[in-house]
Structures are given as structure tokens and as C-alpha cells.
Amino acid sequence: MKVSLVSVFVGLAFGLLLSFSGCTDVSQGSAPAAAPAPQQKGKPMPIDPARTVTLGGGCFWCLEAFYERIEGIEDVESGYSGGRVPNPTYQQVSGEGTGHAEVVQLKFDPAKISYREILEIFFTMHDPTTLNRQGADEGTQYRSIILYHTPQQKTDAEALIKDLTDQQLFGGNKIVTQVVPFEAFYVAEISHQDYYEQNPNAGYCRVVIDPKVKKLQQKFAHRLKAKYR
Image (tube, rainbow, N blue to C red; front, top):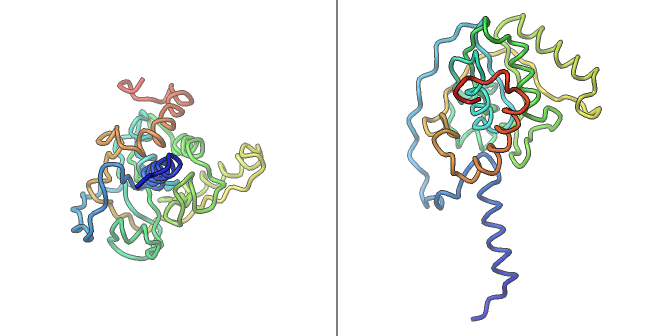
């Protein structure tokens, strides 16, 4: 049976698209026929509200990779927050039935970096004007969201959004970032922690995260930890 070159190209292109679309990497192997067993989750870090930041802006693999490189960020965890279902799994959150967003929770040193500076990185490294979407990652779990831990964090977040809006830094497009009170954080499965560091050759990391990390290094070179300079 003859197969046209066009058919082969279309098939390869479709497979490549699947590998790079969404906060899931299927390029490392085909999906199993049966649902995988639930993965063990890590233990969440202790929370000091004045030193804790919880943010969502697309795939948590990206935000985690950014903030792990920033001086003054002492710990970064990927997880789920902003929803109504306790202790959700990745599959449940991806199905958009939990109300949760993919987020990172940061522990920071206020003597080295301020809350506003953390948010300035956040607004530079994702598009806060696209509702429930970042690039190819689409769904409510990818929404732009700030979950504040203190009244001052709420004030600072709203003030920065106003400043960015007044400056029209996003071409006049409305910032749709939610600013909501923090209620709970559920740490993601262990396979999602340090994903970029553990899977540097994965399709999503090479095509999506690598260029963003280079952008971070260019725009925030003065903020990088020594080993990332």
C-alpha cells in the first residue's frame, strides 16, 4: 500500500503537536491503556503568611522553573489551590471539575526580595490578559490568579495591577488576574515537583519552558541566584 508524503507529514505534525500542547508531555511514551495508580504526593511546606506567596499563571512547571532561579526564594512547590475539592489529583484538576488552578507556593526571604518584586516577575513571565489560557495550555486550571495570605498582599497585588493597567503595558488589554483570599494549598504529585530540572529533554520543557527561562535570565539577570547566572 502506498502512503503519500503528505499523509506522513500530517501524521508526524499531529504527533508533535500533541507532544507540546498542554501541561502534559506525551513525547516520553504513549499513554497506558488503563488509568495509572494515584501517585504519592509530597508534604507541603510550613506556612508563614508573611513569607508565603501563592500564584497561578498557566502550567505550574513553568512558574516553578522561574522562581527556583530567583534569589530570595527559599522554597517552591507545585500544587493546586483556589477550588472546592480537598486533596485533588492532577487528573481531577485537569478535568476542570474541582475549581482549582495549577499554582506554585513560594517561601521567600523579605530581606532579599519583596512581595511586589515577586509579582513583577509573575506579570512579566506570563500573559495576565488571556482568560483561562497560557499559550497552548487552555482551561480554568491555567487561569491567572493571585491568592493572597495577608491584607497587605491583597493591597500590594491590587496596586500593582492598577499601575500596570495605567501604564497600558499589555497593549490596552484588560488584566484578568484574579486576586482572591488564600484558603488551602494541596501539593501536587511528586512527579510534578522540579519537573523542568528533572526532565530537561522533555518536549514541553524544550519547546515551551526553555525560551521562557531564557527570557527570565535576560530580564531579571540581577535577580538570579549565583548558580543560574
